[in-house]
Image (cartoon, rainbow, N blue to C red; front, side, top):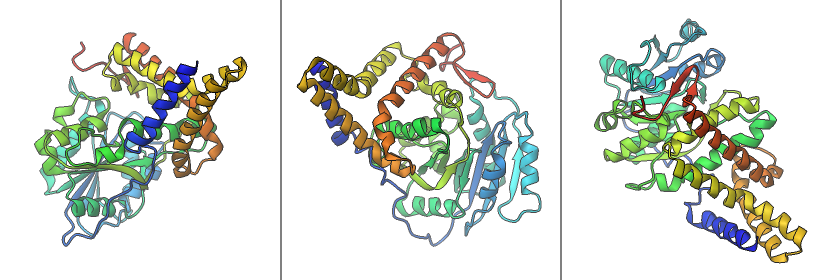
Length: 385
């Protein structure tokens, strides 16, 4: 147990100091100034059965205070709850940006539904105008009135091809408090924002809820056709843009918030498990390594502390306790960002255990043929029959 405690503490020292300072929450939109000319922009919103959140999110897009020309295109991806009709009703008689509602039909083979909708929306934008940027935003994301303006100003000022903000997710229920801040914390640990934002770095990622993309960069990268099969479309998009020579930026958002509720454990479980195994490239070896890594890094510290106290081993208890304290300390900034009580920090091992079980369940569902199931569609590994 002493060796396990020592290994876990060493892992946490390395994570805290050498993993891009992932735990810090100060990566926000880069310094920006108003451009001399505001470029035309199109906002593309893929939406499938989003009638429950659209009354909050869509008006926030239509009310954008953007100095240049802008429009909103909502792509109804086979909704059965009247999403498209509701969008039209919400825009009727309202000032602000013009709205187009379109429906491309069912995806062609090899396409995920969201990317099929994005493809249709981007094609429509190209046919209708000379938009220099397209804002890809999910139907559950509400934007502050100056969100689009600030995104474009940042892209112009820093000459960025892709600017993505991690929307502040909804945290109201007890399960959301336990799981949601950790979701962003783990994402930042996998893709440290400082590493993503280095020009030419190998690490590439984006947050799919809010991605401002230069149209010329999308064409160079062949997006979205080149990533049509991606389940984790945001990270795959960022990698494609970077491979094509584009400059990307990712950070936390102050002007974008998700309004989707995750009131129960079941909905949160499905949110994570639907893509967890895809993140591991459907590899049993990577799954085993992930489970072992989560156990050593997150579960071993409290176990070493408890075992050391029970066995009278001060060394094991000290190593486990120190690792646990360091773990909790790195979680505090994310809890502050989400305005949550700091006493949740020591509960991170419990949350990590839930994520471990979600990841294993994701693999189980994949091998049962259920794959990445979401809103009535199931996606297997790319190339699978």
